Amino acid sequence: MGRIALDTVVVGGGLAGLSCARTLHKAGRNVFIVEASDDIGGRIRTDEIDGFLMDWGFQVLQTAYPEARQAIDFKALNLQSFDPGVLVFKNNRFHIMADPLRKPRYFFKTMFSSIASPMDKFRLLKLFFKTTRRPLEYIFEASERPTHQYLKDFGFSDNIVQHFFRPFFAGVCLDPAIAASSRVFEYVFKMFAQGDAAIPEAGMAEIPRQLAADLPKECIGTQMRVSSLRQNCVVLDDGQELTTNSIVLATGAGEVQRLLGRKETVSYFSEYCLYFAAPKPPFPNSLLVLNGEGNGPINNLAFLSQVSGKYASNGQTLMAAVVIGEYYEDEDQLKRSVKAQLREWFGSATDRWRHLKTYHIKKALPDQQPPAANPFRFNPRVGNNLYVCGEYGSLPGIQWALYSGRSAAESILSTESGL
Ligand SMILES: Cc1cc2nc3c(=O)[nH]c(=O)nc-3n(C[C@H](O)[C@H](O)[C@H](O)COP(=O)(O)OP(=O)(O)OC[C@H]3O[C@@H](n4cnc5c(N)ncnc54)[C@H](O)[C@@H]3O)c2cc1C
Image 1: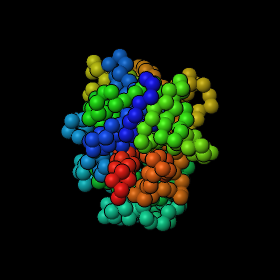
Image 2: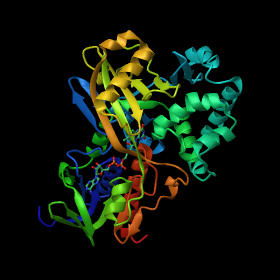
Image 3: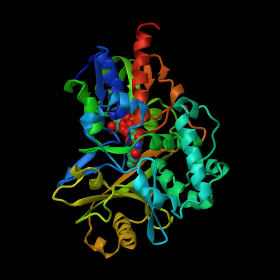
Image 4: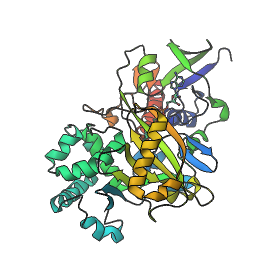
C-alpha cells in the first residue's frame, strides 16, 4: 500500500472503532480502520453454518442502552426480544422470576416462587425504583463496593443471592464471584428494568454491519495488524506504515496497553458457548434460563430460535449454553459434561439434541471489580494526536463501546478546531 496520508487511522474494527470512524466520516474526515482479523465486528461476530446463526458467544443488546438508541437503527435490525424475566433451575424444577408489570401472566408464578422470600420481593421492588429513577450519570458517581457485598447490605437473603443474582450477574460479567462494582450492577439492573434484552433478527453481527454500512468500503482494511506506533504513523506487521494526523486505538484494553508500551495489567474473564440443535424447544416461551443450583458447568442458557426464528432453519431449535471461566478438561469432556447437565434439566429428550459448535472466547470481558471507571468521565486523549476508545479507561459492553467511540471522534474534532 505504501505511504498514505490520512486524517485519522482507527486501529480496531469492533463497535468502538466503527462508532469513532463513522462519526469522523460524517464530519467529512478521511478516516481508515485497520483491523487485524478477517472481518469487522471484533467481539461481535456471527457464523452462519448449516442454516443456524451462531454468535461468537452469547450476547444481547439491551434496548435501554442510551447510546445504542441514538447510534443504531433498531427497526432496521428487526430486533427480537426475550421475554422479560428468567427461569431458574433449582431443586429439579424451573421457577419463573418475571417482571410482573410487563408479563402479567407470570404474576402469580413469580409471586409464589420459592427463590425469593416476601422480603426479597419487596427489596426487588425497592431496587427497581432506586435504579430506574436514578440517572445513569448519578449511578456512576455513587459509592461502590463488590456486588456480593452490595446485595448483602441491601438486605437480600442468601437464598436469592445464590440462586438468582449470582447466576444472573455472573452471566452478564462472566465473573462467578460477582465481585464486579456495585455501580456496574446498578447500571445492568437498570437496563434490564427499563428495556428488553434483544437480538437482531439475523444475528448480533448485524450491529457492526449496520455501523460499517455508513462507511465507504475503502475506509476499512482487514487482515492488517498494527504491530507498533510511531509519531503520526502506525506500523503494520508486514512493515507497511500508514501516516496520519491522528491515531485512535480501539483494540480492547490489553492491546491498547501493549501498543502504548505500557505493562499489560488487564485481567479478563472467559466463556465457552456451546450450541446445540434440538428437534423442538422444551418451553413455549423465550425466557433466559439460569442455573440456580451452582453445580455443573452451565451458568445460563437460551433458546435463541424462540427469540428469532432466523437463528435456526427447518423448524429446528437452536440453544446456546454458557460456561464461564477456563475449563481445564478437554473440550470433548466439556461437551459431555454439558450434555449430562442438559439431560438432568430437560430429561431424555436431550439425547436427540445435537452439538453443533463450541466457541471459546478467552478474553471476553475485563474484570470490573472496584474501582470501576466512570464511563462519563472517560478521557479519550492519551497523547498528542493519540486517542483511545473501547473498554480502556471506560467499561466493556455495547453501550460504552459506542459511546467511547463517538467521544474519541468528538475529541479529535474539537482538538482540530482548537476548542
Ligand atoms: C462472550 C461475550 C458476551 C458479551 N455479552 C455482552 C452483552 O450481552 N451485552 C453487551 O452490551 N456487551 C456484551 N459483551 C461485550 C461487548 O461485546 C464488547 O464490550 C464490545 O463488543 C467491545 O467492542 P470494542 O470495539 O471495544 O472491542 P472489540 O470488539 O474487541 O474490537 C477490537 C478490535 O480490534 C482488533 N485489533 C486488536 N488488536 C489489533 C491490532 N494490533 N491491529 C489491528 N486490529 C486489532 C480486533 O481484532 C477487534 O476486531 C460481550 C462480550 C463477549 C465476548
